[in-house]
Length: 368
Image 1 (cartoon, rainbow, N blue to C red):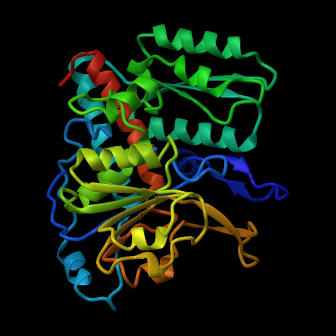
Image 2: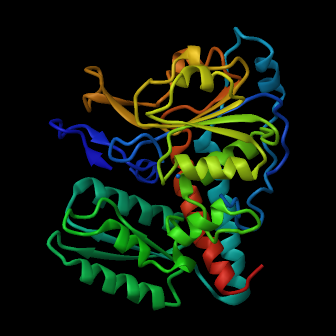
């Protein structure tokens, strides 16, 4: 995440993981569109929906009301409650960790490296630690001063790579300007890359008949929401707005793996409104407040809004409020289902981080 230029009171989130820190049955028969966040003002970012044991044991909410809404253009869309689903997943993860601890005496561990003294980053790290504790994951933290060398960070990553008690490694972004972010992220061994950003994990995600060890948390959370709300992805037209490495491209790859026909809309796309309006499923991740208007939405489509954007609001004690990429007031009158902002994708991202850490611990210990 980054502070908005010239406005220190306003926080710009560059990852939904950071924001959320402060398969069941399929029933839908209509288009879906995805919308997401942007990193450094680029146009989007984020499969392997490999979840922990029993992650899909909870029955999805009834889709009958959603289907009814899809046939009635003047009905309000069903709200896809990411906060509630994320809590269910955290409860499932906690139960599985308890089972693993009782069976083989192993507790998953997540290591976080924080460089510098940014208050926002420190808050995110503190909240991630709190989330780990809530499900029984051990957390390990290294805090380094702003002027630390890249080699010092790589040294700590190497230590965590070799530590059998650590099953996931997360480097808090952004890093100081004098560090090469790609070099640092690539140093995390693929078996502990719970963020899913390692080139080998992304490469496997893009190849047929290959499975990544981990899927980036935000795109994974988007697909999990679709599954839990009974959205049928197979054969549907899906549009992903944004092509970032963090959300957009991984989300498109995941949808393709689910046999959707996928189009990616980005800053150079001609007629983005026309293309998006053909989608049954929309995922938006561009980091532009209220960019996707009601006129972009196909009646009955499903909208996943990954965007988290601060806009000025004199009535708010903070001076701003958070909105998505999609104009909720307009889209909710046309779509059959939609995620709110906040409370939609954000809580799912941290839940998927915890899920990936559990998956890593189970894999290395051959625990089923």
